[in-house]
Image 1 (cartoon, helix red, strand yellow):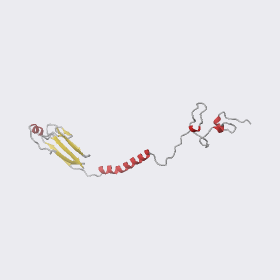
Image 2 (spheres, rainbow, N blue to C red):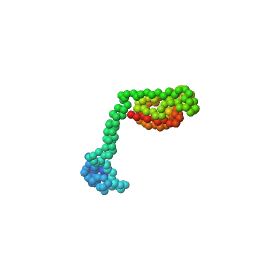
Image 3 (cartoon, rainbow, N blue to C red):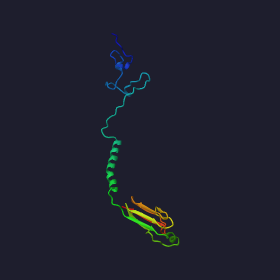
Image 4 (cartoon, rainbow, N blue to C red):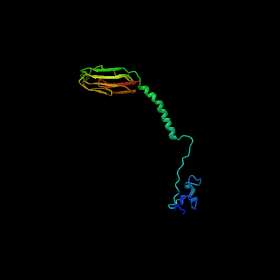
Length: 176
């Protein structure tokens, strides 16, 4: 019988004298760039797989994920409780009668609404404009013959323009 040998020096056959000179990661021999092993063709250090070392404690990214997850778990019931099973608020209606713009232009005080409006969360404001002119009450503008409805879902304090007051201003407060 004829014995066949591989031409590759890394085959590790018993008859090959160079087979023991090539280190392997699992043979306990030296490995990596520190061992001095070089690729015969390029002269570069042999590439070895990088092994992760066990640090024992979680890294910063893992701790941050745990912290964010815990905050979300704690915040969900608070947010849900704010919007679920809450009693409806009160409904307030502002009725702007016909001739209001003419009375204001003549310098009259129409007393349609007070200078300050106070609402709580979930209250609703309905503005009915029966006048022939567009009127502005803070952030709300209502055209002639139109009706506008606004629900308050956020705490706020607003000072803005109001066409129904000779001073031209109104304060709207939305509290809890």
